Length: 156
Image 1 (tube, one colour):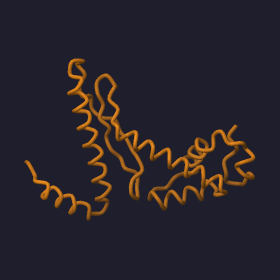
Image 2 (cartoon, helix red, strand yellow; image 1 turned 180 degrees about the vertical axis):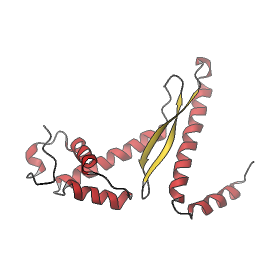
Image 3 (tube, one colour; image 1 turned 60 degrees about the vertical axis):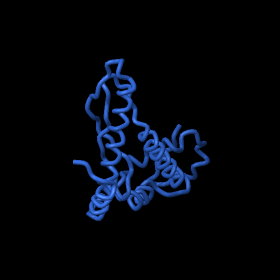
């Protein structure tokens, strides 16, 4: 079945109006882009005997919830979709945001609530601790402010 751009656009618009439609479309688009990129990668390296080798699970922050998708693999493990670098950069930015909020005096619980508002998903104190620990690595303990109940222990 071959659709024109107009037909495809109409289908996408209708689907985006459904509950979680935008998230579904983002997941589909990400997967499709990665599959196409793998196809081009393997076409360019056809002499090596490398082939498609299924998928592995992936996730990233999305609009109102975490996006879940499949990341295509190749037999030799050399294929790395470029879009994942962009998504990783976004995750690094979120960790920096968590660290900034934490160093400004918010507790892990409060940082989790901010992330809940932004991403529509609950983040546990443990996941916030991990994010703030990575983001505040290298800071002097005195620059993090006084220790408060509900906050992580200083990173040493």
